[in-house]
Length: 569
Image 1 (cartoon, rainbow, N blue to C red):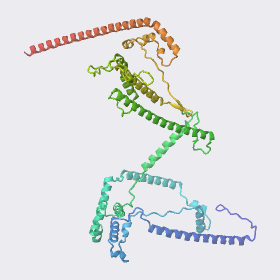
Image 2 (image 1 turned 180 degrees about the vertical axis):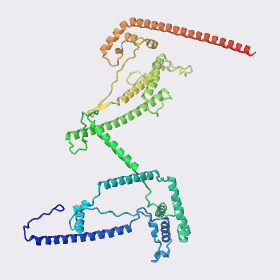
Image 3 (image 1 turned 45 degrees about the horizontal axis):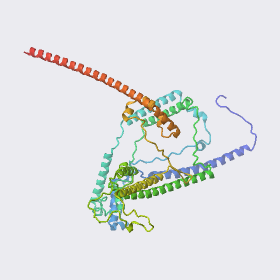
Image 4 (image 1 turned 30 degrees about the vertical axis):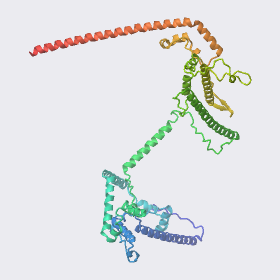
């Protein structure tokens, strides 16, 4: 048979004819029960979705119009004025919103339920009893020509939709500026306030709220409520522009660029600089759980802190000792000022050792002691002394001490008094220098072992010019000065024996070296003078050439002017 393939098989079990209908009936009942439960569930979900669609929340506050805001203000005014209508059940402060005003509100579409394989099989069982006619399904298929025609139509529809999208992108909505938004908000506030003025109870209640920001009688919570309602604080003012196809294309291009950069970097990772080294990132040892706390480390840290505290305490003690020593020096300076008569010593000022040392050097100089020896400070002898009539060589009992020694302190000459005064001043200078040494000795560089003060030791040196004047040093060059005296001899810290040997050797050759240096200086001065003359001569020649050139130019201008005057005549 060409139309159908018929298969004939022998029945193996005689009871099979009775079992299969029973199983089919039982399976059909189970499927019908499951379908009924599913239908009931879908019905309940449809009711809930329809209820949700009817009762969609106003997320964007589109129902809160200016009329609704004015009703809110009237309600607030009635509550504030304690209107009796507030306590009546029949009073309605809010009118029902007309349905026409909500037609333009965006309605959320219910989510479509996804179709699973189990749902599809259940549908086939219900509609066709679990049988799918593959032959009829294939027979109802479209021809190749029809499929090609459908593809062409779909392409045309897609191209038309793209053109519509481009036209929509060409005409875009203009974004409002901040000034325009502020103007709209001001108009909205004026409208609400004007609505309040039309209602007499609201007008009385809001009289003191007209200037709620500057009125001290308005409570902060009332001012906040007014500001919130007038400025529509419940509306989200952050409006974003919808994403267009151009934005998607730009984002895709940026993603492609990132992918290209990553692929390029990955493909050439072995050719980049530093590719042969492996980057390592060390752990933070301080914050690590495996931190080792050694007792020796902790002991060293404690000793370090102890030494720092001890050093700080010793510095404070040194400051106290220096202040105490400075007060002693100032007291001594005051005593010196009283004795010497120096008036420019400021005892109350801050202590400056260099300044006071210079002042003391000026007081106790060699001229002072020379004057004492020459008799400048000797007590004068006056001619109008009272004549007692007693001889000068008379011996009085008071001139002898009880032990038989002659008393000499009662009658001293002027020179003895001056020498005593000079000795007193010398003693003051010595004490002053001792105080300065003690003051300087308080300073130290560091403390070793907790109690050993280390100080920098200064070497005392004698001034030495090696027989050269300042002019000779400036006129001579470095090579000649190094021949005269080596730079090593000027080192401040040298072996004393080596230094004495070099000084003796230099003194033997000093006269010869001095003549050679002077000869070189004279020769250099002569060369410099000769060079200066050459420069002066060249300068004079240049001046003469310039003057000659100026004269020639003036003469040429004069002749040219004369020819011009003759031509004009």
